[in-house]
Image (cartoon, rainbow, N blue to C red; front, side, top):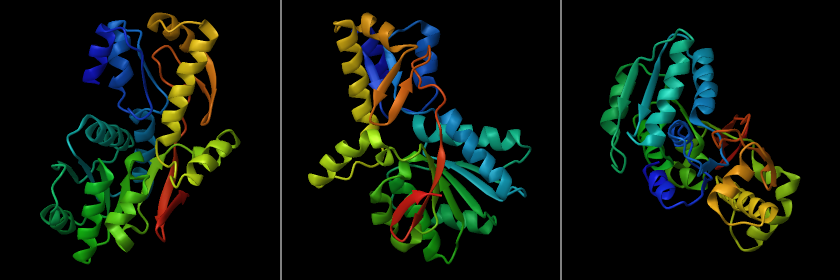
Length: 265
């Protein structure tokens, strides 16, 4: 987000495949900027799904909402908390942790003592993986709930069997789309699995290329005007951009880790 202002001053178009914080597009829109877009959904949409799950399954509030203090992690945790609270349920623990540490046993011990049954982690796969692994080492089995950052094979490399049953929100798997079939095959032939935001990145380039081809221009303002309000065919399906530069009507579903793989629930 801080880089956006630099790009604006330099008249550079920015299309992010993975910046999910609402402020990424909200603030530029309020400032009248024209250069900021994303191909992924927003945390306020993702947080509604996660908050509703927690409210539906842990009505007694035996929930911990944790975040890593980053724009992504805290933003996602706060959106989830807002929806949970909107449903009339107050979490038992709301706490920040420091990303990059290796030992979260004290935090885990606290959650165990508090009787927490579900821990929502707003942050990345490394820290979330260490937390659930260290919880299992204490014979403590809370339900780990998180967001799109856990949709990566690296998560299971950290957790091993301790990651079994972890659930997380993400958009429907674009690798299953017919539009992506040929590209996915090419990636896999090169020994690379296009998981997570890989295809969203490819789609961002496709949007720019189509806008440039349609307008015959590389000018940022011209391209921005061509993108907003219009629909583009990409490897993640059709994307229609709203006036803020967000995809209209983003969809989130649940994924679960099982036997070393993740799949939609």
